[in-house]
Image (cartoon, rainbow, N blue to C red):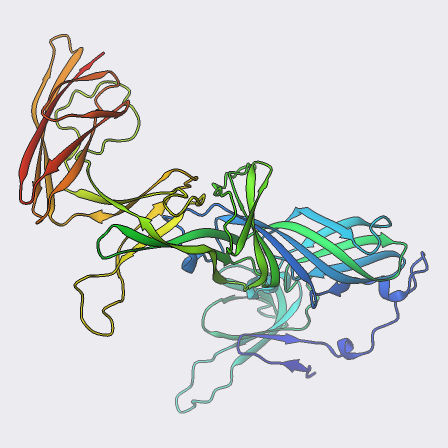
Length: 528
C-alpha cells in the first residue's frame, strides 16, 4: 500500500488517510458547553501588549553579549496582555509563545474583563519540544520506515536504497532496534550512521509540542473575548551598563557617554515592549544576582529612575522591541562633556594572595616583584564636576584624540587607549579607571634585608624600590606596598613620607623630575 507523505532529506512525516477525513463531532460536555470548548483552544499573541522588568547579574568583566548562547546572567518578569476567547463555564486554553526559560511556578493570571468571576482551576506546562531525537524516541513501539544507502555494485551506480518498514523497539545513541517481517531474522539492529539516508514516521500524535506552552483549565461566567494579564519569571534576559570616556588632547578633561546593553535569549521576541530595569542585590533561593544600584533622574535622559523597596527601577520613556537572540543598546543618560580628569601613576610591586595568612610568613621573598607602573584616570562623580549621577557597574572604554596624529581625513578620529570595569559608584564618589601601564616609567622592587628573631616571634624586612622616569616631564608615582607577612606590624624606617592606607597597606608618593631615578627604602617589623 502506498501512503501519502511529504518528503524531506532527513525526516519525513507520514499522515494516514484517516487524518485527512473530517473530524468526528465532539460530544457536548455535561456542563452544556459548546463542543468547541471541550478541546484545548490554542491562543497566540497576535496583538499582545508586553511589559518587561529585567534584573541583571552580568559581570562586566566576563559577560560578552555577543556570545550569550542562551546563558544570560539575569532574569526578567514578563507581563503580557493577550485576548482570550472564552465561553461561559469551564474552558481549556493552550497559551503558547511563552519564554523557553519560564518558571511555571511564578505564573500569575488575571482577567481584566471579568476579574472577579474568572479563575484558573488547573495549570500544566508542556516543554517536551519536538527535535529529531525526542521524536524518534517517542516512536518506540510504533512503525517507522528506514531508508539505507546501498553500496553500488560493479557497473551499477544507480542502486536504489534499501527500505525497511518495521516496528521501532528501542533507540540508543548508536543504534536502532527494529522488529521486521523477516521470519528468519525478525529483529535487526541498525547502526545510526551516515548509511541512514531517511527515516519516515506515519503521524505526529506523540504528545510533543513545537514550543513551550501553558495549558489552563479555567472558569468564567462571562462569554466572549477577555483581555487577560499574564505574568511570569523567565531566564534568558539581562542588561549591563557600557560607558565611553573620550579624553582630550591634554589629558585634563573628558566626555562621558553611557548606554544600557540589553540581551534577549529567552526564545521570544517582545515587540513594542514597555521596559524597566531593576538595579540592586535581590535575594533568590540558590542564586544571588549582583544587580546594580542606580538612583536619581537626569533631565532629558531615556530612563526615568524611581525607588522601589530597597532597589531602584529605570523605566524607558518609550516602547522598544527586543528581538530574540539579539542585543540592543539604549542611551542611559545624555553625554556629559568637560569633566575634569586627573591622571595618576601607581606602582604595586608585590601582589600577595588576598586575606591574612593563617600564620606568619617566614620565607624570604615570598611574592614575585612587578616592574609595571599602572596608569589611572580619576573623575569626581559630583555635580560640581559635571556628573553627580549614580552610575551602575559596567564596562568603560577610554579613547583619546591625538594632538599630533595624522593630518588627513582621519586626524580627528579618537584612538582606543584602554578599558576597565566600573563598580557601582554613588554620587559624590570617585571614579578610578585603570587604563594600562606607563611605557616610560620603570620600577624594581628588591628585598635587601630579612631576619627572624631567635624565638621566631619577630620578623624584620627591608625593601628597596627603584623608580625611573624616562619621560620629558616630571611625574608623581604613588608606591603602594602591602604589609602581608602578619597582621601586627610597624614601619621602623622609611626614606620618604608614607601614609597608612589600611590595615595591611602603606602608600608612599614619590616625585621624580624628567629623566630622574630615585630609590625608596623602608623597614617593617612584624611581631606575634
